[in-house]
Length: 467
Ligand code: BG6
Image (cartoon, rainbow, N blue to C red; front, side, top):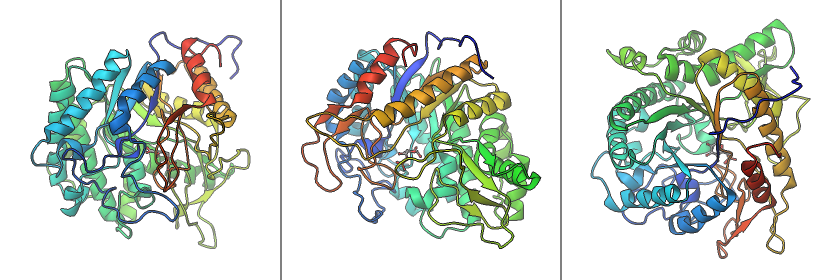
């Protein structure tokens, strides 16, 4: 639908930007921090760096927050490294790690920037992983303990909480991201998933108990799945993949029940988790205050191929490879691609908003969206017009979604500042702020404002009126 006049963005819209601890902080073993699964990985895709220094935000956060303030951010979404707070995941609290996030949060609040904290963004403590990670039910209580500590420490200053970043991507593409060891059987992945659901539910309850006025929501990666054609079997395959990729996670987080199509798929493929007594009651007893979601692009899928060749190689968060006999990954001929092969679909953003709103009727907060590119620093400048185009097109679709009647709380694109991507190194940049380092040469880690920084500052200042 076209509108003659669009609705304005809400006055309290959270114009923000995002990051995650392990991708931006560095200082991987400083001040008592324990190793996470990412630190313990020991292998990185060829040509990509590790996360030991990242963007050195741990030491330069004050400079970075000053830049965020200059950008005009109303909100900053960051994650708290579990291993800084409780280095081995479920033992002693590390005061130096706790103090770091107090310093960061205080700096944000002093700058008038609303802190939005993700509790866990891919960096499970390695000590917990050694005990089976999320496949071990003990991880649920470890997370609840961590939740109690951080709600107690920061709950008077942080009112917006996100439980688990992209739980769905950790289940579907954990090997690519580095959160899951290669070769795990699907049953183990979905047992881990069930435990994460329980952990999320416990965190939800604790937030409402311990944080006055606290708001909490899940943060999956949600991308509507399109059928490759209008053949009824392609439509069915897209419906299946929507259930497996998207609704499994949100039906549980919001309505406390397993999505029936997803559950049928789990049973059919021998991956249904063991459910202990009381689990379903716990899951059904919580309701989040909002839904946060990361959106990069839609997916297109097709019915299983008659030759059985459903599965391509090289899948990741945005490249659906297919699953034999269930669906086949397809590409959308109407969409352009980024330099890294991810499709670009701003209209799909609006489609995704509408689907989420129609299904759940909860306020929606965008916690990631952005363009990874090989930026070039020349004479202290980065002319990233391609990123401006991407963001402009997506923000325009948010305004259309708002005009459609969707309740959108805010927009936190990825990323506030350059950081290390999940599996494609430092050279895949997303930030409004350039960090001068190469893949393996740290150079001086100096910060530079990209053209997109100046553009986004204007967007925020005009509350989206001047795109
Ligand atoms: C999301 C993650 O999957 O996408 C981020 O939550 C990640 O951590 C972002 O960085 C972009 O993906 P990538 O693989 O390009 O870093």
